[in-house]
View (cartoon, rainbow, N blue to C red):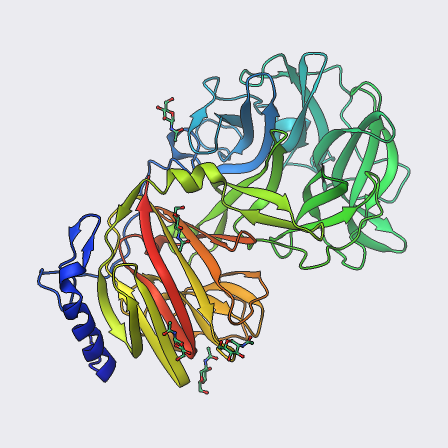
Length: 542
Ligand SMILES: *[C@@H]1O[C@H](CO)[C@@H](O)[C@H](O)[C@H]1NC(C)=O
Ligand SMILES: *[C@@H]1O[C@H](CO)[C@@H](O)[C@H](O)[C@H]1NC(C)=O
Ligand SMILES: *[C@@H]1O[C@H](CO)[C@@H](O)[C@H](O)[C@H]1NC(C)=O
Ligand SMILES: *[C@@H]1O[C@H](CO)[C@@H](O)[C@H](O)[C@H]1NC(C)=O
Ligand SMILES: *[C@@H]1O[C@H](CO)[C@@H](O)[C@H](O)[C@H]1NC(C)=O
């Protein structure tokens, strides 16, 4: 590790030394670091192995990852039930994505539903539900109807040629196993219309249609629609949840030809209806708005997404006060940040809400925020690069001036904790090209992951390449659009639990990513070709 000694390092040294007497953090005296430190500290940059024991972003029993979620709020018990696809695919249990579930009151404490498997798969390779996929639960007369995807990966074979159909299981309890209903006729795409009849008919979402006073079911499908094949959201109607009639295409993607709009969901906030779906191509969650439950569906005023790739197959539920959007953040092959993304991961939940223009935005659930604010940890700097002005040592406020094509940064010592929150506020000056946070750092200059704020692009992105290799012509590791204006304070919160890294900016967007290297390495702040004022950096734990 090399440390560039500049005039500003020396300045920082004197500032830290001169503040020594009042430099007392909540954990006692801050006998700081290389820039005026007294304690020995040996940092070895390495990639730690993945930990278990996730709490805020849980895995299933035996650390089995969580797949597509089906959240449901039970008004009677005040419990959020999050049924999900248990990510087991034909292992020694010979099952393929059975439904399991969590219960939670607050999205901080989760309980595995003790029944374990709620809807299982068939062992007969000729059955439609040889494997199962996602769906949704609705209550009617004290019975919970769980509509799910019957998926047969062996199709077409000599005994089955429908890869997907919609099936039903019912239960009188959200925590117990559901009974498969053989009296329910498996629903397929209408045979007389140009749908894909062999595949791509899945992810039913069922709701009471307040306009027709009947039940509606929307299903992800593919259809030759107005002369071209495209992903569509097909609409079915029922009076009794048992017999369904095709009603038409609820949404065909409009000016976007999606291959598939997966896991659709429809909900209302205020006077606006929202149609949410996951794009198989970009792996992003998109949405459309309407003043009617039956459409037509319009693009939002702003961006059509509020998150990156880490919330696939997202669905929401509400306790009548707040609405929570849950999904999974993928793991990566070989537990490597450079591995391919895998299906399934940790359960993640954001609060989703309506902004003044009727668009949707995300923020940290208040329960998680307050849970992560209990104990403040001491922050110790490790390495400083370029022109760094200490504005307030105690509050950890800094001015990074990297004008004239410069670079300035501070890397802090690793945080030795399984889960913690970093929060701070950033204000940049007009003309700044890039600034942000250092994660998974080996040094403060080049070898770190960059949480990049890019005002010219209107993007917040996470890049895992070393600084010298960042190439803006290729897609970043993860990103989310956000308009960034100079002279404006942006509040940034990062919740880290082992390799789950979840970023919130200004109660508007969220970026959840798998970052194995975040554990136990340097973190900090940087600026390139511009100036940023970084105010009040705090690290706290539950
Ligand atoms: C989680 O649940 C436990 C046991 O019910 C309780 O003691 C604890 O206070 C809960 N924690 C939070 C943050 O709600
Ligand atoms: C931070 O640096 C910028 C640019 O050098 C300067 O305009 C601003 O006044 C500084 N802020 C503080 C609080 O010193
Ligand atoms: C900073 O300026 C240098 C030199 O003009 C340029 O090569 C680099 O791409 C700039 N960095 C950013 C983040 O814009
Ligand atoms: C950091 O979080 C704590 C607890 O939520 C809050 O009191 C504080 O104001 C936050 N600071 C910043 C700079 O956002
Ligand atoms: C930002 O603030 C500075 C100093 O107050 C001012 O000179 C500048 O015009 C402001 N820029 C914008 C874009 O508002």
